[in-house]
Amino acid sequence: MNEQRRQVLDMLAEGKITADEAERLIGALERDRSEPSPGAAPRPKSRRPKYLRVVVDAPDDSGGDGRSRVNIRVPLQLLRAGVRLTSLLPPAALTKANSELARSGVPIDLAELKPQHLEDLVDQLDDVTVDVTDSDSTVQVFCE
Image (cartoon, rainbow, N blue to C red; front, side, top):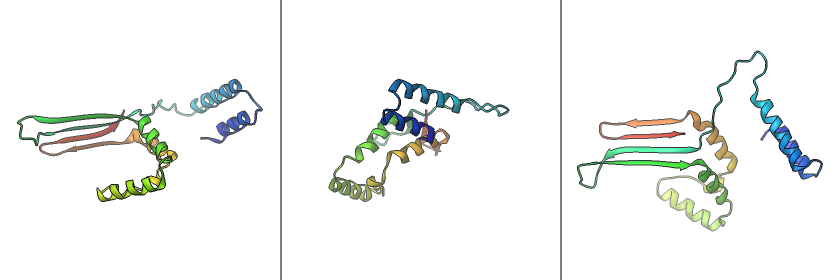
């Protein structure tokens, strides 16, 4: 959150401005930030990704002669909510979850997940595309 936005929210919290005034000020700040400065090249409007998509196309290992296709679309808002929920878990549950994750080969400390870390990740996801292709399978991970 930028400093000007924080100042507007602080003024609202202190009762110096109304909610309508705060909304107008924040709207004006966003318009000012999105307008290019004179002489600057206009930037293409980038949209923030809303979904993490995982697509897998692989041979069916269940003995059939077909192919398995997995197409998962995970809303990033769900990931944000999940990160916020970790703060509600009791420490004993976090410890147990971390040990199970580590035992499964996923060395992540859930206590270290913070909403701002996820927002930094989401901001960078526009540039992430993972394509893995071998002779039999294709895996794609991307944002949309």
